[in-house]
Length: 281
Image 1 (cartoon, rainbow, N blue to C red):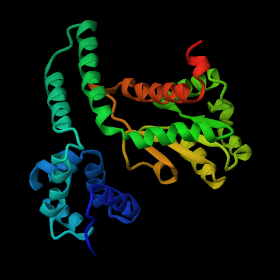
Image 2 (tube, rainbow, N blue to C red):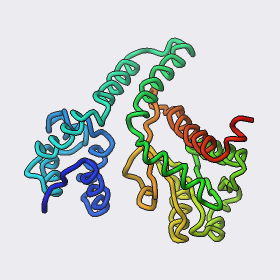
Image 3 (cartoon, rainbow, N blue to C red):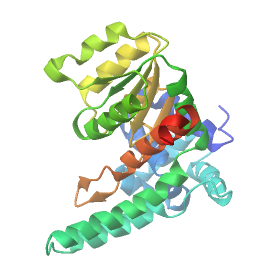
């Protein structure tokens, strides 16, 4: 087995083989996909600790994709860093921020506000580096070309999904918001066709309702755009475009600022390209 020659080839290979990997190798795969800069720069011992596995598992993981060892796979990520394609040090800055916040006692609401502001500034700065322009262009084109947009998102993802439904309807795009009232979510799949688009937003723990709805949409050959915080999730296997966001986190409470920023960027981009009379009204 020849090793992948580019980061994109490796990511595609990991996603294709993910379900067939052992539980420990899946832990490594998720870390490699979600924290590529860490994997490029840290030692095998540090990576093993963060993945919750033995160092030998890191080596075994690399060899399962055709590399001679972990260092050869890491070189692929380091080369990507040197070309300027990645945001250096983001994961480490986030770790330092969490450590700093974790050691501080809560003195009042202004402290909490400051912590969320600082966390979101870090996360928003990373968003521009993490999202590819070609993916944003593809999403806006999918919205423009489809007959109907179905939007689904439960739990923490609900506000993002609700915004998509609200904003698209204001732009005169026929939009169906699957809100799950009366456990009626599964019935929407009956009316979907290959001419429609589904936008699905979900974060861990992924709701069974969203997973089931996305799977049903895939059976109807409906195009699917997913938004989540990891490339390894039960929705992305069906996705035409899978967008990954990392919201700020303070004291184990996650924000939605980055996800909402991405959603607004998609909506406004679509509006300027397809409904300029509404934008300029």
